[in-house]
Length: 519
Image (cartoon, rainbow, N blue to C red; front, top):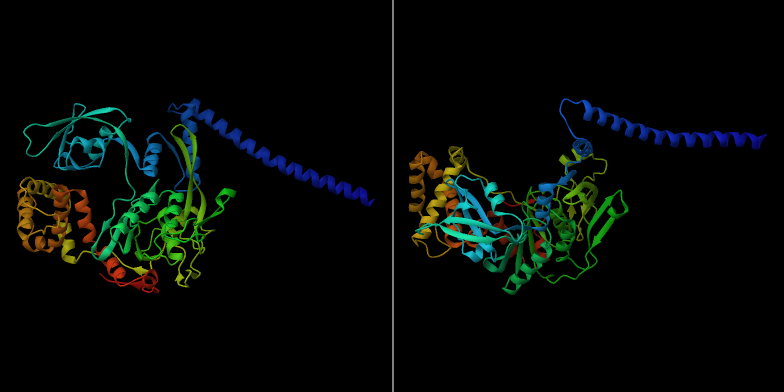
């Protein structure tokens, strides 16, 4: 009897498992049938006529929205092209950076070794026509759209130049233009080098390596690496960038996800060439994602002093799945952690995506034993807030509410006049009281009248902005960038820290719990 009973139990058990599996399959089938029925009824009877293809597209978009993943998206057409441009830095065009001034598209710079540069187009030239279309009143986006196109195609452009009797006409051929993620480095006072990385895109690590090598050859003794407002980009490029400053076999990044390929540890593979180089990394609330990978690994291994404000806190990985020509699916596939196990995922993103995997501050430690908080971004070793405006300067700014374009137009026009008159001979010129008063006179002429006390309170702001504008149009974009860096309070504070340290170890000695400095 016992074997018979066991046989009956086994039969019933097996039947239940089979029925359970069938029930799941049937449920999926019913849901699929329901979807097909709904789609057919909407296609045939909805008040607005929609094709079946459009309905499928909208259903796909709706499914991604229901994932509660703010980064999930189906990228097609221009969205796909924009993503490609952000990740590669490449586009087809003529190599012009432009801005809108006084109702005209004004050339800010012609990128080196591009069609615009070879043609001799200069900063301050005003765009009059593109392929016979008048450009007066154009927005920057419209001008960019008109100047870009397919590689190898031609474009006719006409510019007006101050001092030229007739407009200048050029026939340019569009080329593949590369926007550097790492602009040319600057060697500042005392042998301190300055490098910024605007985004972590293709070739970022190679560009960074080239610039560090070049600055070292020029006598760099310490480095400020500026990652402020770097929104991130490619994970693998971030790993390669961190690899430049770490020793072989040191971990850089750990990721954890559902797919086997998403559970991985990236480790430094090459010996570093600049072990002796003290480094300060500047960060702020805009430092995110792949940029935080670089910061977190250097901080965990005590390789750099992190200075600034707490970073954004994006500790999740997005993967791009190509689905056809100019079409790709982007979804979040994993969470990443610094080498010592810290998650930097911020509370804002966790509130959207769910916090079951969040790692809170449990007292993580660097290689040297420094306590490093986890969760909510990378907390700097030295907290350094941005310069803030005084109450008087805030009144000055409020007085310009709605008038900023007028202010910018006046600055540009005055800078171009100074260039034309050859009034300035060196890029390190000083903005004088007479220059400042000329700006005020022109503001009044344009209907912007300020009390003496209000205008005087904005002296520092006027001097800075006028200095940048003159440097840009009279001496070039490199001169403007050097001036901005030299006047940056956080960069100056980083230089003070670096001059006080003769080695990377001595530099790390300036870090401490919640260290902060005023500037």
